[in-house]
Image 1: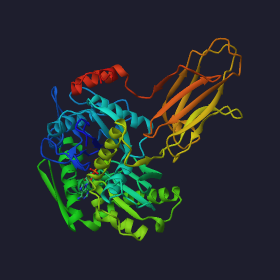
Image 2: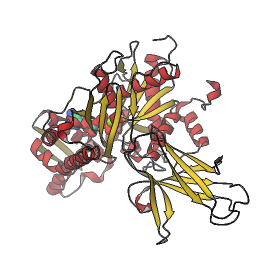
Image 3: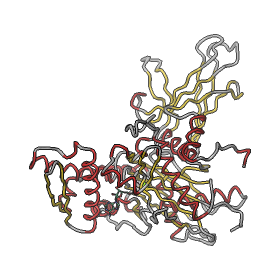
Image 4: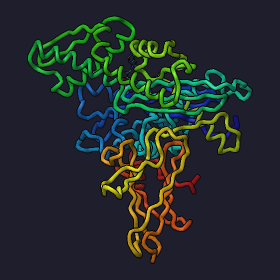
Length: 515
Ligand code: ADP
Ligand code: MG
């Protein structure tokens, strides 16, 4: 390794836990520990007066100061504000994520020295708006985000690394199809990858941004709380702090059930108590439908990749919730194969991200890449157009889901009148034909158009989906590119980003000239 190569850092910014890894002198990914000595940092922020406390202490405060703790901000990326008011203020979800990242930055710096270049991972199923919000969170935390990559892809890269596939002398050229099943705290993601030598190609991807370990916790909370209501006629879920404690204890009992066949949860509220014993069978029964949802999505993704179970070389388990025995059992029954737990379910994603960071840094230094990643988009991208026959608005899909990236698509719009000076294009993501069922990405205002254009002048709007799932739009008239503004939904402006960056991380605005 050259002495002046910046550290190659990858961050798995999880819904419940975040993990950071860095390549060592011989390009091996190593998980860094945080200030508390842990590899996993809870993605939780406590707003304590003008101070913020991130991680384990913030999670502890859920039992006493639940109203001031932000949990699972990742699930709200893409919204304008995190829904809870904390310390009299509401924050954009990406700012809360930035506080988590900032702690990671400060803690990591103590071990590897100052750095700014990072790769951050996102669920493969994240849409464009959430990807942009993740990138922005990195910026606000004082980073230069080189790239964002999909979590299952990162896990597959870590797996490939561990199997020696990234070695320059690796001769294993046969194609291996691997299914990555990632069940974390708040999101579920499944991706089918084709690994040929050092090429990692995503074939199909799907998932659920609102399904994860927390839903399993919630079922247990409800089970215990309902027993409480039955015995005492009052509901412990009414009080945020009691609810916070109950949730913490249920999560703990859930973990116990991964190792033992029974666990018990006690709940105190208004001087009354219940102790509920939960068997693994009972727990599996009350969460069966959640597991079935993951099974359904997994089967669909395999189908979208055009494969049968028998053609899969492996099923890789990633995410803390894959420790639940029911997950392994379900996948074993579906596939007839023993799922692979050779990669660390907590660390694989961060390791893959660090390997990708190393690749990007090497590339920028003119070195040949050690491996290659090819992604697909997880949602179709379209524009809203008026149906000439029905005059109804509909979503015209330009780039269908599961297209290999990067991909470009064009559409010709025509001016409606003489000397028209602007055109407005609405971009949406989703599979439905009706725009209301899709998520809006943004509007593209094309103006000013050159003067004196005759009616029906063709205006070409070209979309390009980058490898990282981000979108760029190029507009041209008669082969000449023209200016346009792409206004994103719920996105912060550059000035807002700069001021949050200063506020959260104290790192000045990034300008490439100061490099
Ligand atoms: P994310 O990336 O979404 O933050 P992780 O992959 O870190 O999530 O997984 C966290 C989830 O895994 C939490 O819901 C946690 O309760 C669950 N989990 C961790 N260990 C176990 C275990 N032994 N048994 C069951 N669930 C577990
Ligand atoms: Mg995760």
